[in-house]
Image (cartoon, rainbow, N blue to C red; front, side, top):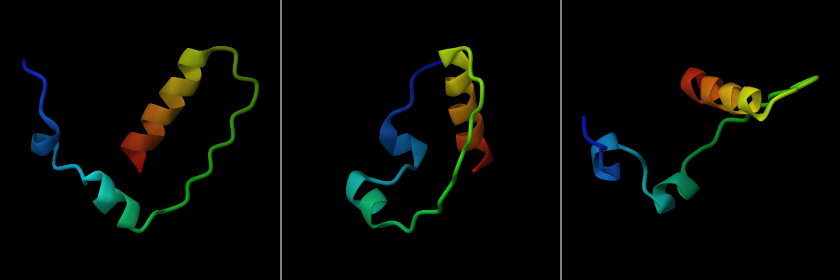
Length: 49
């Protein structure tokens, strides 16, 4: 398996991202005991959104 280039991922360029409409997302975490849990929440939110 090889690492994909940014062009292959169909991502927006920096300028396109700055100009794109954004949706607000608020995540509230309580009693977080590990940084791994925070990273997991961010990855899950990114996949869900």
